[in-house]
Each structure stands twice: as structure tokens, then as C-alpha cells.
Length: 365
Image (cartoon, rainbow, N blue to C red):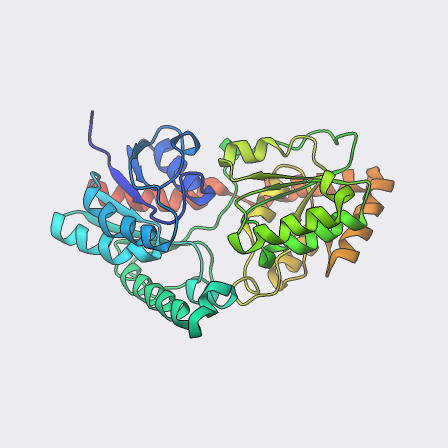
């Protein structure tokens, strides 16, 4: 078997991670051979990639363990690291082994730490350790041959070759929403935690009894017990909410068929205040109307596209859902505007093409 051109290191995010899939799919479509070193179920991995076994241990200590040894196992000429804790070892392995080091940064990790409860435990010591890892990751990614970042506000801002690689939709793993289901149905796809709107979604289910809700994604350990207590106290609403857990991107988006609405109820945390969640682009691309909290860039996108409504809490969400359930022609017009805007404004091929071109030039050099 021919050696891979590029090895992707993902010591934290699993094989089901959507950004991992988008990047891998773009590289494979360009003709490159890709191997992935990441935890998770191989059935959820991007098709066409070679999967290398890494330990499946849960917890930060196992994540660090993977970060330490995965780059030394990589077979590709290019080591492309997608994890902050593995940037130093990826840089070191590339220097020692004569490989090319490239890096990807999902988000502003220093800002993200400010909305993580675990970072504040034990007098903030875990947060201090996390900030050291984030700063180290930023330092080394700035020195990579190619550095991709998930949005304009994501560091490092000065790098050898910095490419903004937004999480634009990858049509190969999306399913169109199609015709409206008989029962109004809303869907959420992403991490399931309080800061990403979990409490607001479930309270909206209580206030909108004609609606069913599909929630797709891994549940935060901090919120699992809260969900259990909520389900006991709200039996009717709980019967209309289905938690699907972590699924591959392709399986996640298959659940969109027939759905009416996509939910994006991020709280105004430091990590989200300047962000546009990738799900907004994806909801629009598959023809869903969107309900979003009025974070600045989200509000601008929804307002300019006419692809949904803004809601500042569960009462507002429930009011909008009732309006759309009572007037399906209104939501059909919104869904059409979403599709029209996405087809006119989102050029995924160009965005991923810039990354692919940069990687190809390194391999040919």
C-alpha cells in the first residue's frame, strides 16, 4: 500500500468530528492519500481515509497521551495537526523526522476556556494549565508551513501562511430537508451543553407542545444529570425530545429530512460573542429555517439572508415556533430564502480549494 501524502492528527476531536470530515473530504477529492490518527469509532470516519489505531481512553490524561505519541506514528509527508495539545509534538516530530508541519485551529481556545466550568475548579488550576496549552498551540501553529483557522477572529493572526478556512457546508454529507413533516419538527446538531443552548431548547419544548425536537451530538458530562432530572419533571415535553448522541456528520444530517427548523441558541459567552456557528450555514444549505440567539454576527447573517428569526429566550423561541406551525406558508418562504442565499453566497469549493492548493504545493516542492 502506498504511503499517505498527509497524516491528520486529532488527539481530542473524534473520528465523527465534522471539521475533521470536511478537511479530509476536500483533501481526498483533490487526489491526496490521507491517514487519520484520532480516537473514535472507525465506522464514523471519513470515507477513503486510512485510520490508524490510537487509544480510546476518555479524559484529559488520555488526550495528552494521544497528543504525545500520535505525531511520531504518522506516515505522511505532511503532518497536519488539528489539536492544540498536539501542536508542539507535531512540530517536534516534523523537525526530527524530516516531515512538513501544518496546523489547524478550530477556535479561540483561550477565550473558550472562560466559559468552561472545569477550568474554574480547584482554584482555577485546570484553567491555567489549559491556557498554557492554548498559548503553546498558538505559538507553534504560527510557525507551521500552512496554518488554517476556522474564522477571521481565531488566532494566530500572524503566521507564515495563514488561511481562513471557515466551516462552510460540505454537500457530500448533507441531506436536504425536503418536504415538511406532518408534525412540526425542530433539530439541533452540535455539542450538547448549557452554553450552546441546551436549557433554552428544552424549555422551548415545554412551551411549544405541538413541536418535536431532535438533538444530535455528544452530551456534556456536566449536563447529563440535569437532562435526566428535567426529563422526570417534564414528561410530556421529554416524550417529544429525542437525544441521538454523537453521530457521524452524514448520519447526523440524514435526520434533517422532513425537519422544519434548525436551532442555534448559543449563549453570549466570550467564545461565542464574535462567532458564527457552522450550523447556521449548514441549516441554510439544506433548506431549514433557523432560529438563532441575537449574537452580533449571527444576527447580521439571519437579517441579511432572511433565512430565519432571532430569539432572546425560550419564550421567544416558542412564540416563533407557534407562528410557523400555524402558518406553514410563512416558513416555506423563509426556507426558500435560506436555500437561495446559501447558493448565492457560500462557495465551499473555493474556500477548501485554497487549503488544498497550499497543501499540494508543499508536497510537490
